[in-house]
Image (tube, rainbow, N blue to C red; front, side, top):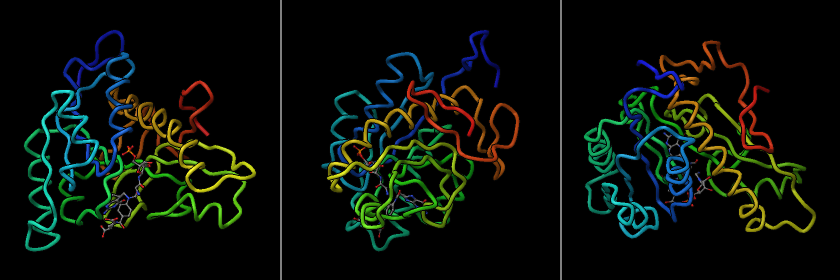
Length: 230
Ligand SMILES: Nc1nc2c(c(=O)[nH]1)N[C@@H](CN(C=O)c1ccc(C(=O)N[C@@H](CCC(=O)O)C(=O)O)cc1)CN2
Ligand SMILES: NCC(=O)N[C@@H]1O[C@H](COP(=O)([O-])[O-])[C@@H](O)[C@H]1O
């Protein structure tokens, strides 16, 4: 892919977003595109929940949407195959799972190998799965955070690209911790997608490379929303 003198790709970088919830991470990507820090276009939003906020946000923004309810399909694999065939149809360079609450089949993960990432609300490898904030509090962790990782068939087990850390404060409950983490997630996801869109970060071929070198540890988001090597 040729890059312009300003480092931005000459052709648009096409992002498909999968979501099941309110869509604040989707909105963060749209804001970053609008603000000029993310040289990309969201070419489709896909969900298992037709009435979720992310689908409504996408429609409002004039972005193509496909929402398929699992209960309308014979089984998980049939739903998964239908949804990811719709994803393939928009020819994305990157698929971003942003609160997509379905475990994706190994076949669909392999179909988009090297092109699918997820934002997860924990400092992986701690707390894969759900209810991460409550689990961090129950463990008495002094810090919590979020991770962007490559999606592999095993849940939340893929190579980690970037992380952001926040302190756990006295009196935090799960909802308060989640609310304080969310804006940092938005910055983390947008910054990571910017590095992917400008090809500084490469997740193809089963490896993670940053500025042409193997990435040994996840990049860390600093107080200025810039990603720094650990
Ligand atoms: N094969 C993979 N699929 C997904 C990954 C992944 O790394 N590999 N990341 C997730 C996102 N995720 C956490 O970040 C996550 C999504 C869904 C679940 C889960 O248990 N889902 C249940 C249904 C839960 C519900 O409907 O409330 C299920 O699918 O049966 C855990 C973690 C995206 N998918
Ligand atoms: N295991 C996946 C998971 O829990 N993802 C989390 O869902 C939320 C989606 O919010 P949003 O719909 O406002 O973007 C985000 O906090 C994201 O980290």
